[in-house]
Length: 214
Ligand code: PRP
Ligand code: URA
Image (cartoon, rainbow, N blue to C red; front, top):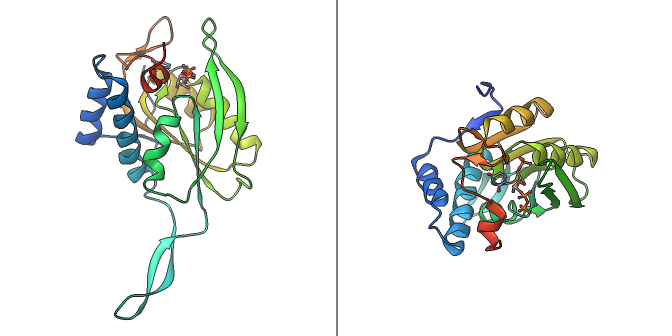
């Protein structure tokens, strides 16, 4: 399936991101290393995804003199992980922007229908003026991401970025069609979904691999 060429869809091409995703895919990679890799990839992706944050000049006194120097302006950041697996990416982005607020949206996929079921939503308030980064390592059918962003918009969220590590073309298409205004950042665009709606080649179940469950 061809994924549309759109300025709001960015697939990373950085060798460090590619290398770390290859390590994540390996079924021999254990929980501890898996968690660290997810955090590192989120930081690398975040560095790029936040490159358009506006800055403003503020006055700072150095040991030498007073100068006007740029700092992140106006719009502040909110990180909203989709539980559970999105939690693994939060610390990587907080390392870049420690003052960001963190909301949570709880979703799980029904095993038969593969459609998301929401069980929790708590967002920083007010959300309207914040740049919101939704995190989830996996964009498979796209159902979880679409519903999470529906919720955020219902609460007033306007400037939204979605950051994932691995995406299937089906999920990118569904998310982009539902929310064309949302900037989508993808570590690797994989081949397709299988009959169980898992991404191929993918990395398996991201939540189970981050939290050591199953
Ligand atoms: C995984 C993943 C996404 C979702 C992606 O979560 O973390 O949230 O599946 O699939 P979709 O694009 O088809 O909606 P899961 O439902 O396994 O829940 P968990 O993170 O609690 O394990
Ligand atoms: N969720 C996962 O954790 N992995 C997949 O491949 C698809 C959905």
